[in-house]
Amino acid sequence: MGITLRILGLALCLLFAAQPAIAAGDDPLEPPDLSEYLRWGFLRVRPGLAVSNFGHDDNVFYNASDPRGDITLTVTPALDGLILLGSRGFMTFSENIDYTLYKKFNELNTLDHTGRYRLTLPFRNAGLFVDTELARLHERPIDLQDARTIRRSAAVAVGAIMRLGWRTTVELAHARTEFNHTDEDFGSTDRTIGDVKDRTENKWTARGAYVLVGRTRLTLEIADRSLEFDNPFLGSLPGVVRNLDQRTFLPGVDFGIGGALSGRIHYGYTRLDYDDPALTDYRGIVGRTALTYHMKGSSRITLDAERRVDFSVWENNSYLLDNRRSIRVTRFLNRYFGLEGLYSRGTVEIPEPVQGVPRRDRVTEYSLGVVARIFENELGRKIEYALRLRDREQISSVTGFNQSRRTITLSADVGF
Image 1 (cartoon, rainbow, N blue to C red):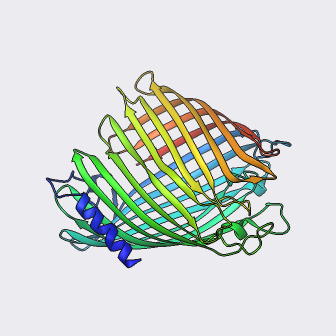
Image 2 (tube, rainbow, N blue to C red):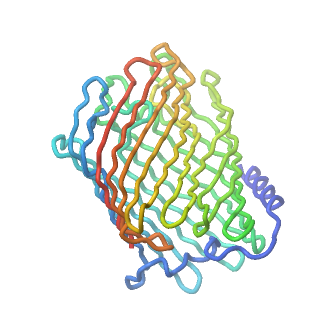
Image 3 (cartoon, helix red, strand yellow):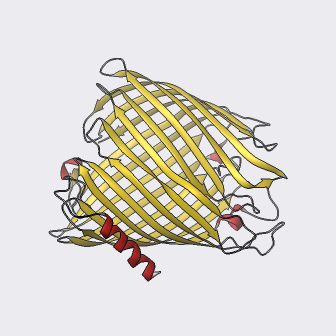
């Protein structure tokens, strides 16, 4: 693996030749702009509070045959921060808590937490970093949404950053992540979701960024990830273990905040190679597009598309493909009030048959809303309220997996 990492690093060094200056604020060896934060003693912070999903959900159990509705509310306090260490070192962190409440079905109440910390120690044109992330999240598996899974994950990454020129940076890193899943109402007597999804991941990554002009950057990520699952398959494939290697080559373009166009386009190639020949390997395109075009005033158009490989909760399936795309248009009628529309389509595909039938789900979502923006500045600080009506439908080729939900909610987002 060490030889692989050196080869990846050499490839990036040759690809990204040194040129003139990197845009201010994009240098990973420098702390973020201090003007983005409030000062609390030795801490610099950006607190935020979001109140969302305050309204009615007509299918809170995700049960197509017996839909039951309830009043819901989600409260999300968040804190982004920066700590300066001496003359050059710094730590950035992010803490986020989601508390979701149900009026009638209190057993559905959830408390989720995600915390991320990154310590950076620069030394002129190079530096070291340590990343950590702890998360406890309630999830609805995309291929079994009426299950309520609790995912716990812990990740640690160490790496080095090198500035090869005024325009070019390269990052080399190794990360280890452990995933643990439990399910409260999976409804199976012979297995749990943890039996098929608990795993440990080790990942070597080489990333490069080249500033093309202003805040627009060309990027490249080359990754080698090994996955070791905790338990063998049950059912029709007893003793088959889903251990595998994944290799990804992902070029892209980033558009920095401040221009008419912001976001990123990252698309490339990945391959999954299972140790056991009984399982199906994957070769294909993966990636993500998240672009926002800012029109006059606060109006904007947002395009979002993603194609990714994930792991199914079904014990005899190697993986699943999640392919989604959406467009959101927000048109402000004056300084404060606007209309919002969202259209999203996607598919979920599983290579091996489920219940003897090849599975392919089509997912469609519509959303209409009214937005009131009281305040916003160039740093992203804002006070915004929104009323939204959402309709989501999932049509599956396998009997029993159709889903439909309709919600009407009020939300508030306050960031300082």
